[in-house]
Amino acid sequence: MNILTIRNLSKSFGRQKIINDLSMSVPEGSVFGFIGQNGAGKTTTMKMVLGLLKPDYGEIRVCNESVCFGQTKTNQYIGYLPDVPEFYNYMTPMQYLRLCGEVIAIPKSEVDRRGQELLSLVGLSGSAKQIGGFSRGMKQRLGIAQALLTQPKLLICDEPTSALDPVGRKEILDILRKISSTTTVLFSTHILSDVERICDHVAFLNEGKIAACGTLAEIKTLHGHDSLLLEFSEDKDLQLFKKQKSIEPLLLCSEENNRELILHSRNMESVQKFLFGVLAETGICPIKIELMEPSLESLFLEVVK
Amino acid sequence: MNGYIAFVKKEFTENMKNYRFFILFAVFLIFGIMSAFLAKFTPEILSALAADMEMTSEPVALDAWKQFYKNISGVGFSAFIILYGSCLSGEYSKGTLVLMVTKGLSRKAVILAKYTVAAVLMTVCYWVSFTAAYGYTAFLWHDTDLFHVALAAFVLWLIGFLYLSILMLGCVIFKQTFTSILFTGGIVAVISLLGIIEPIAKLNPFILTSKNVDLLSGEVVPSDFIMPALFSIAVSILGLLIAIKLFNKKQL
Image 1 (cartoon, rainbow over the protein chains, first blue to last red):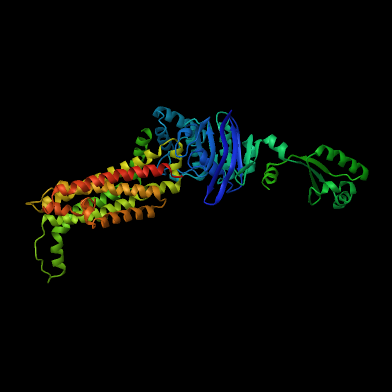
Image 2 (cartoon, rainbow over the protein chains, first blue to last red):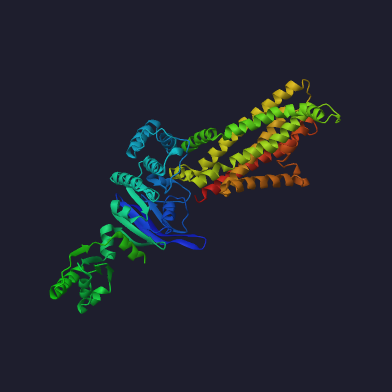
């Protein structure tokens, strides 16, 4: 079952079309990476899902209920963490969670219990400091706690790690991984290593449309091409290898770096058989032969080009 | 309703924590106390400063009320509008409201809670100021023969609600504090200008802020205030409803 379905969504600001006929679905239980360059429209899409921005066209359904702009009914299923969450600075984390609890009408005792659990999950338990004195990372962690207070079915995180240092980033990713067993996570980012660490599904947003969508494995199969790295002990071996007439077609799709040659192909098996034949014939012995899996970065670059 | 109550509590706390309430309370209280004192002692101060200046008449209690209405309707309400002009813009620019709205807090509750708290604080400040002015005026002038002292204050209090309603509308339409305040000032100026158009002048809420002293001196009668007061209440409610309607459609 899909927890979020977007169909033919479009949104313009003035004459600039930000989202152009976007369709995608987020399966329940997934950690969904929503990837796009800066300004690709990730935040705009998320704000439309939350009913904060009005779509020009299209339909958004959360837990099979239609999202209406300006209304907050479907937000009962959603926890939202903005890219830079801001709180009322004069409150302590627990006071802020109590305010959230009162807004969503959770009994005080229940808010206190959940609040303690969540603050301990995000590493802020016992913090009686006012939020005004919090670092960015601490605010981000409190942002996750407030988003989870409603026990949402879907947690939407808008670039939760972009502004953080490596330690803060790791902490946030660890928390997201921890909660993914109970909550579907939609996670927008342009940091691809974060996606590889925690996401099982991804969608690439390019020019307002979904350029590719699916599980990581599916995307790699559909859009990726494997690479084969050959490292030679001396430059003359590399040059000799390149001079072989029979491998010229392979060099059309290759990269060269020092004494390394990287060959790209969608049919790596036949390339390997062919190469080993050439190496045996010429007697050139590379010091390293490595089959490289497509990286998310190369996939992203291929999809958005 | 839960959201409204929670947000009202939050607004009260915020106004205490950011000293907005204390500043306004102090401003209104000072004006309340000073109006009587200034009326009483200004002639003496002036004569002390300029020995050859002769005062033609003794100050009376009406002079104290003149000071009070001039200060409160001018500086007092202006201070209120300036300090409250950031009540929504601060939340827009920081993004604090987004988290509340995505929690299910209705937008109507946001506007109503902010209006309620502003109106309550304005009421407290205003009547404390009035009580101070009343007490000191009674203390300094024992035999006063003024009419409708409470009613004159009541009608000015009513216009406070109208100003807050216009301010709320400005805060919803514009994202910056400055433009919200400018909008409120502009609308208030338009209302006062409409006061010179004869056929509708008798309905104009501006009477509630300009004829208070005349009511005290008996130059106008209470019935002259009925239509402007009703009109002011109607416009206040209408302004608030429009603010809610527009805020429901605002992209956050």
